[in-house]
Amino acid sequence: MYYTSMSQGTRKPTAELGLLDATMIGMGAMIGAGIFVLTGLAAEISGPAALLVFVLNGIVTAFTGLSYAELAASIPKSGGGYAFVREIFDDRSSFLLGWMLWFAYMIAGALYALGFAPNFIELLHVYGFTPKPGAVGAIALPVISIDIPVQLGLAFVAVSLLVAVNAVSTAASGSAETFFTITKVLILLIFILFGYLSVGGGEPTSFTLQNFDPLFPDDSSALSILPAMGLTFIAFEGYDLITTVTEEVENPRENIPKAIFLSLAATVIIYALVVSVAIGTLGASGLAQAGEAGIAAAATSFMPTGLPIIKNGGAVIVFGAVFSTLTALNAVVIASSRVAFAMGREGQLIGSIGNLHHRFGTPFIAIIVSGAVMLFSVALPTASAGNMSSLFFLLSFIIVNFSVIKLRRERPDMTRPYTIPYYPAPPIIGIVLNVLLTGVLVWYLTQTDQLALLLSVGWIALGLLAYYGLNWLRSRSNPAPSSGGGGGGSTPDGPTSGSGSGSDPNSDPTPTSDPVDAAMTDSDSDPTLSRDTDTQDGPAHTGAQEEV
Image (cartoon, rainbow, N blue to C red; front, side, top):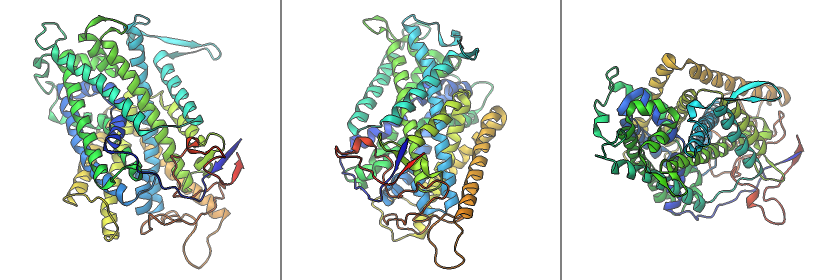
């Protein structure tokens, strides 16, 4: 099988996305599985105060959103946070950031798959095909005689199918993202509407403010919202995807920051209304008992029944949960593979990971490797997957905020189409708040989820081993010259060619050869380009082909 490396040419995307398109990209990524899967878990930790958890997380996220806006306008390169750090920090720091982001996206994929399974079973239950998710047992595999829980099997199938689809073809557009996001928002608005219409209905699940009294459970304090904030932080990951299309947005100086804050504001409002309805109708204890299917259980309890086609009004929300978890899973399959692809292209992973398939035009190997990790990760408890992904996103956002400060100091005269207002307060506040949440989350993991903490530390240790191991192999195959100028090759503590502190983000790096895998590619090529952009005369990306 053959894979094609990226060409040395560059492409300038056409600015065709407006403010609405950019905003929908952020909302579409954020309003995914988190609100459906984690609301019940947050209620279990903080009771009715779960409502505050989502509001405060939105405020924390806003400060890092400012940093993403400035960096995206200053460094218009593919790769998101990894691309920013790659230009500003040394080789090792950029590797660790990419390694953490890659892991965060993959574990998020496991979380979304684990959220899809119970909601899909709940949908079947609404139509009378299966018992409730908690009553569904296991299936026996005929060949190896092992019983696998149905929910785990469904999560495995969901990941496998989406990995296969993305490996063959990846196609998306701003208009499609807008349509799907509006559909999800409308479903949640229906949930909110029926929830508030149930006020004073006299039914056990009618909305009542009594479910919010007391706001904090008797056995906990106001500090209980902090670990819940750490767990649910991943529900606000996604606005950063807006910064990956900076060059494709009209008037990015104004529209990128506007899109970030419009998407955040709209998402926070929707989250707050959804959580308030779920607690106000089902109660915090009932929501906690429902776990990952909390929102679906709340919808089934108070929405009308006997409607044509959909049979049960709650089925609308259950369908929304299934749809959102699948779209969120698909998004992180793409995101995780693109981070791995960018790292492979930069020479920080095995070079073949940075290649495109000669026929499909997709980062085939990056998708398969990322998908394999997701498949193993679906065996994790849902809470552990949420905790680990939130932890690594928090760590990544801390580094992104530091990147703004470092870039301002080292390149004060750099052209900045957008600058953070009231600098340096926002990035400093972002660092402090993210560090606080990280510390609380780590403490919480030491008390309740040692598995997540152990796996997180293990992934970082594995990354350091991979980093120094690859550099050692390259140094043996391609010894550094005894004297002369800098340039090519990576060093453990310095930037590789074309990257690192002080480099011009608009300059073309000098290609290097990778003795580990001779597939190094140009760092300015767009990793999101796929076979769908090819012309009829052949692939848009040409270059050396290698047999893997």
